[in-house]
Amino acid sequence: MLSIRLKRIGKKHQPAFRLVVGERRSKLKGDSTEDLGWYNPREKKAHFNAERVKYWLGVGAQASDTVHNLLVREKMIEQKTRANHEIKKVKEKK
Image 1 (spheres, rainbow, N blue to C red):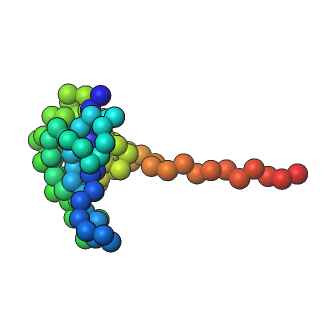
Image 2 (cartoon, one colour; image 1 turned 90 degrees about the vertical axis):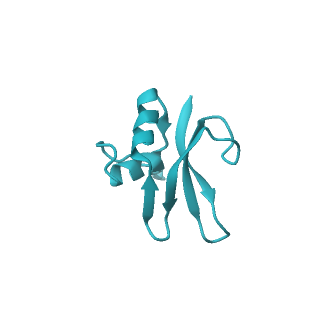
């Protein structure tokens, strides 16, 4: 199964990410099928190839939660954002 996810690049303490398509079970630093764009969280800038992103989503690739939220923010897909963390409930002591 293919997934669209972020691959970290950049120096230490200067994160930057590439948006890549690859096999879900492969390593992030490993080979990727295609490079779809980039995202810089420090400047909140992103550039994605919209045509190719829509193609891969149409073929059946699944976007990770973070990528899904970025695509919603960039208005490439019209869905609700996903929560990408779970809130753990603290058990009450009796």
